[in-house]
Image (cartoon, rainbow, N blue to C red; front, top):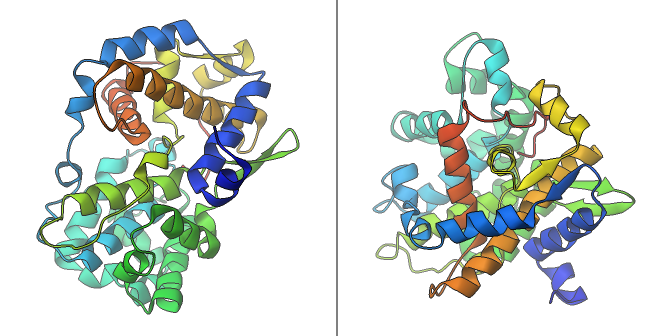
Length: 331
């Protein structure tokens, strides 16, 4: 049970608590618990053993220093949102493309990962770095602002050192995430639903998960442990609700489903959008509960279930029901 004190002091518990409120009051989205149970039972045996290493999804960071890895993650997750509008511009840019761009920059333009450089970066510079083309990249100014704020935050609060973000907070994810939220506005994924403040915090939690996963693989070179990953929720975005809808686990009202099928934009902070994301969080928490009670695994994390669903959605994304389309900086 989440107490009032827990809710006030833990970022991820705030997400769970307010997602539950949305679930309890949803009128556009519901959860088919029978299909949830059936699907969860089907992945119990082997799927959780298939989670790839952070290294295999990003770059060989094991011999890097902590500064380089934390800087890379902070840059990556400052830019990691809303890629779907690129298809309207005649090209496709997905998360993997962003990773590839940053990996090239690690070799060719190391100053890009310096806090002072990021604090002064311009939109035109970022445009050339991201696409090397004349196409207008969606939400470019917001992505640049995100990097500017992150760079200024590290300069002003942590003496220009990304690793100090980890060291000064003793590797405590909750403290690390709070520090970023207090200083970098583009991570404040909050909204109002039926009179109540709701916390989604997709990008700040994925940053926390990246720090945990990457630093865990650097044990021979880094003498610090990231704590608190067990509290993190899944990361409510586009792809996971897309696969959950295809599986029949998330059920939408006729109007909402029709808008999604017609590729109509769902306004940010609308009841429909909030309900899609919040119910996705609840689905993964329910799946985690089932998996925990049916396996001998010591540690089943919401972030691992998120990966399984996200990866399944990625593989099938062009063959299944479309994802909802919301123009936002938060996911």
